[in-house]
Image (cartoon, rainbow, N blue to C red):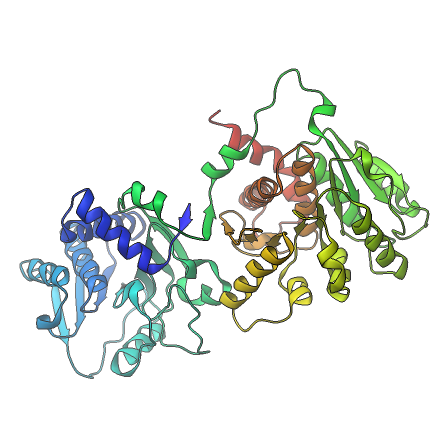
Length: 506
């Protein structure tokens, strides 16, 4: 699914209006109805609806929503900030329609006054002040209105985007005048701001509503940003032939583990096996023999010359994917062995954990890494690779530039894990949950990526499918365990059902 800049979304609205064709006011009504159905599904009818409206089209959405909620029996009150003479054309039409609804109280506020205090047990606040077109900070009286709303304990629901938020760049200020929404009802296609941690305090839980922007426009619109959905991954997943054998699905090679960190090797190897390769070999120090043979009997083992660390590579010719990093430590011999692996591999490599930390201290090695390799850092590991950034938008720009410069795929782990590619594209993942923020989750992802890559998937396909499956297995585990009790092994246990969910419609 494409993520579009605000100017492209505006073009999509106009394209739909001219080519469906549909009147602008009817497209607004369609958006209001989409919000209305979400609201009546999720808000008890005894709640009182307080709608804050501006003078633009976002305010028009709010006025239409207020009218629809009142028609359903909700006690609804509107706060309109600005003169009715200054409303946008579509907003004005909805204002006139609202005026015919006698059950709604409409407060027109044109100067600074004392705003009501709302009752959290009774009131739901709907924010329709500004919407997605804002490109400068909110100041003055309306900034005070936003701060007043944020001081209330009532549930706040923003329409399209929280008022005051920028969609395509950072808001910058540490304490900006931006609505802190509990829920954001945003219109498809999604906006870039939804995917960055710095905006989480404003957006809350966001819900994507389809208002019928013509698919022909979306297909032709240019973008570098995408949102990976189940449908995208179903297209990637290859159906298995009944005459296949273990040699069909490749051989994954995992360099993992050191004394005291063999758990990382166990998790990576188990996850790799559960991801579909025909064979898995774990390269481990000799001291890990009993642990791996007992915990993961299905994996073959290659023993390092050293008792406790990784110090040298095997003959790589037998393998169809190579991953390194989980639990390997950063001993001097391990550093040398990693450099040797980079120099001798003829195929893309998958780097995680300590392998990334070693590269962060030896950046001159990076240009020699095979093209198409995959880096899987968490934010701190990425910072060690590229340096600090001042905000999430800048970090994403740096991530994309890193991928372009080195011909690499970067999987920046976190909520909506961001995958950047050598052509400068960025794919945000749609699965996963806070319970996955636990030790070993990254080792599981490395195993999954290696297992998928071994089967002949491209680096891009491996990243998109692997990250999605990893997050989906985590979601299935969270449904059973909850966020607090979820551990990395639970993700592995749910990989089978995660794959089954993609196969469901074949």
